[in-house]
Structure formats: structure tokens, C-alpha cells
Image (tube, rainbow, N blue to C red; front, side, top):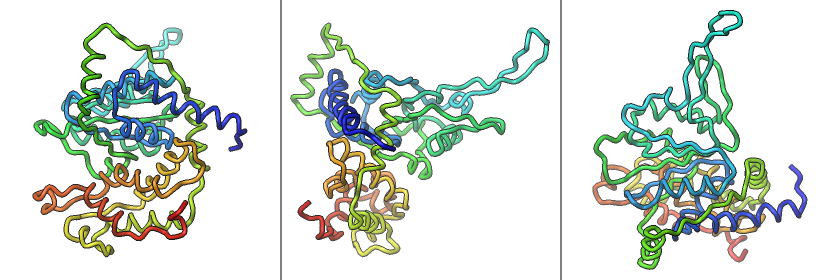
Length: 334
């Protein structure tokens, strides 16, 4: 797709403004917001994890307000059925002819931004209803395929503490999330600002800055960001090093049960391109790959029982891999 320099500059200038608009409501969480917006312009989905009270739902709702897109919230519960998400057929009658027919009544999944709140509280049967939508951007019901609106962006949340009544997401579905983002507690200064902002009469107004067409233009532009071939090889080396069967990293052999597949490499390159564009660059740097490696690999590297017992996380393994894999000398100074 061809772009004029003016149109590119105009689009890119809106990204920092978009983040500023969101931060009228959301205090701090710079890295989290960056990663969510990077996933958005990369055309992928996010899984957000954090303890209750860290404004996960508020963050998603605020992002939807800053974008001129349709938004639906789905509260995942143990009794939620697949048809509650994708929709169902209803019997209707043509009053002029008296004939009856089935009409597909679209569910809440037919929107641009979907908040899948507490996604791990619904059974696997309902979770799996999202698989086709997340990968193919369409749903199939009664043999008929229905395309979803574009852009289509799922932001799912889950609580890591309360495990009663939850159903862990299967690996196949976790792999459909482009990024797995962890939300931590705010700093002392940020928490003071949160308390002051949320206990008074101040109600900031969020102005939408990007529409559907502009987001799709950004998603197309991300694909045109260049990446050096030696960096592509570096990505391949990182992903292959996560697999115990063919790695030379002892840390992986000791703690990892299953490594990441090729989709992890695709996600790492795509999000690195999106991060470069987010920072106003048209080529991927080493820092882009190293920054995105953690949220890309966090849910794609499966730890063994020994690692779970010793509290060894996928992030620790990723850090060890990044230290062990030799960085391409051709791009060290770029």
C-alpha cells in the first residue's frame, strides 16, 4: 500500500496523543499501555493479568473510548455458553407471506474491541468459541461463515490469585494471544495520584483520536517496517533456544517442558515492527526485539513441574536466553 509522507506523519503523530488521552484516566502503567497499543497496531490480541483493583477493566474501557470503534464487554462466567458470545439463530416470520425462516442474531463478539473480562472463569467449551474469531477474524454457525468487523481486537483479563471456579486457558488458545501482559502495583507517587483523582469530582473527558480506517492503515504500515536479515536469524535463534530438545541453554533444559513454536517468532518480529513504528522509526532495532521478547514468550514457554515448585517463571527463562544468545555483530551499533 502506498502512503504519502504527510499521511504517514499524520498517523504516527496521533499515537503519542492517543496514549496521553488514555492517561487522563489511567495513571502510570506506561509499559503496559505501550504494549497494548503495540498489539493493536500489530493486529493482534492481548491477555492482561493482574490482581483485583489494578484497573484492568477501566484501562480497556478507556482505550475503547479513545478510539472511534464499537466496543462490547463480555463477562465470562461458569454458565456462559458459546452462543452467548457468537450469537444464535432465531425463528422469525415474514408477515407478508406467512413463511417462517431462521435469522442469525449476532452476539457481542461482533464489535471492534472486545473486553473478555475474567476469561478463565468460563469452561473450555466456551473459551474455544473464541479460537476461530481470534485467528481467522470470522465465526461459523450452522455451516455459515460470518466475517467480523475490522479492526478486531480482543483484550482478555484474568486474575492470577483466585483459582477457585477457574479454568486455565488451553495452550492452543494462549498461543492466539499476540502478547501476555502482566500488570503490577503502582508506585507510591502513582497510587497517591490515583487516590486523589478517583475520590473527587474530577471527570476527564476522553476524545476519540483514531477511527477504524486509520487503525487499519497503521496495521498495513507495520508490515512495511524493515528488519535486517541478521535480526530475523536472531529471532529464530531465540525461539529455537526455548525448546529443550534442541537448545544449548542449560537453564532451558533444566526448567522448560515445552518451548515456543514458529508463531512466537512471527509475533516477535511483528510486534518489534509495531514498536519501531510506535517510536517513529521505520526499521527494527535490537532494543525492539529484546523489549517484546518477554510478553511474546511469557505464555508460549511452558515450565516443568520442577520450575513450578521452585517458582521459576518464563520471564526468568527468557532473560537467560537473551543473555545466552549471541547478538548479531552487524547491528550492535545501530
